[in-house]
Length: 283
Ligand code: PDD
Image (cartoon, rainbow, N blue to C red):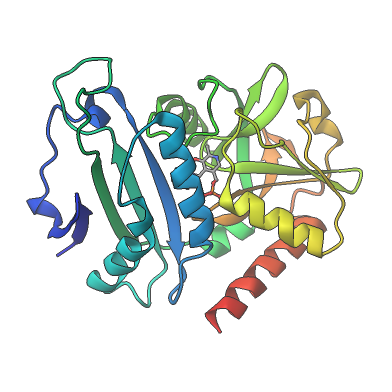
């Protein structure tokens, strides 16, 4: 029986009933987080916590118990017997349930908070051998820095990638590469590791932040600048990062082979550094 968290209580999932008037359902008026459990600890929970607080603030949703997120996440791991399983913790906060109106409910109402933890198969071998991706116009809104549950453009673009046998899609806005449907993207160009700078055009990925730190510690030169899609022919490596698959080397973009068509040295080094960090944290 799966136990989930709902508005302050831990309940069997089938006991949870969300109102049809919930603003998450009616307007996608909410934000979310995804964190990873590594059979002993949650990776960079402080980072996920800080990003959640920021998302809530930016969309003006008040969740008085926001600092309970780490405790809720741990409790879900324990109650679902996930201690020894790679798992993802999902948490969503919406502006609550009220009669449909574009204006915020007045007087304010409590938010709806839902969280679950589930074991998953990281498919590390499959991913680390390299993935194919497509390019897609970035059809999202102009506040991609907010981890909003409003993900329709991401979903439609991602499905196009999947329908074409690809694993992910890289977004291009005004000719410049931003990020992917559910990950950040990095390139190696002339030996320099490149990724889009933090701005309203990309999500501040927790994995992105930590990969940049590991790259810096490894003496890799970094450039946080937007790469024109027209420069893709010049790159020697590419990889994408997120909480669930960590680092996935990209071996082709729109059918064109990247570098030697296999994970390159910078990508492999960062993968090793990331794995070593996880191992060290496991103790
Ligand atoms: N997605 N960019 C986008 C648009 C994302 O949705 C995500 C994560 C990232 C990477 O962020 P992080 O490294 O913090 O996971 C970048 C999660 C995994 C999801 O929606 O399921």
